[in-house]
Length: 226
Image (tube, rainbow, N blue to C red; front, side):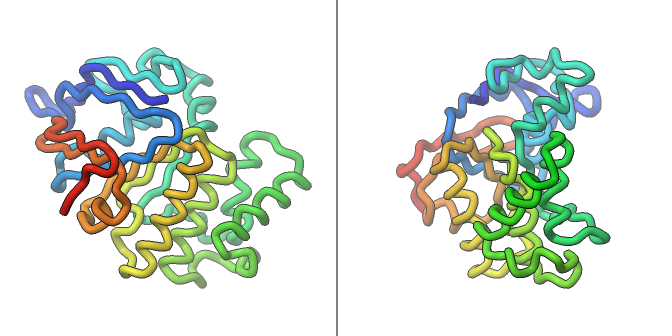
């Protein structure tokens, strides 16, 4: 599903955010990305949904080399990739239902289908009764669940999440993580960048540890220890 070969990302001469990164992530696999601030986690995720372009190397998503993508090919890629940010990035002047519906409307889905799919997705994250409310009236955990519903409503093949629980308390953190794990059990490939090491041992998923833009360790699922 995701393959990276010798990928480097340099913003300034001789200064690398990523250096010679190679990895292979299969369909339905759940992977944690860890490392200190500045290790390259966010840069790696941005490359995977073409928000930035690598300086060197090849990135293959769904069998296509995204380094060669131009024009309309990039929006087409993003229709298959859901993204969840730490700061939610919700549209505050639109209702919860409208926020989730945006991804479907972009694809040109009929209004009846949009409403049905948005309701079903909100039901899945336990927010169907808040669908007519606005984001600022929700708690942090509820806003994050809306963001996840928006990312998953298109049934993406890939879900990328950058520090999705950084602003949440421990109980809400587990609620959000459980939703992401459930997505992977349905076949979505999930990559989650996190600095919360307690999650690694709790979930026992594959962990890729970045240091100074390089892969320092790649620990298979169930081999993770505290």
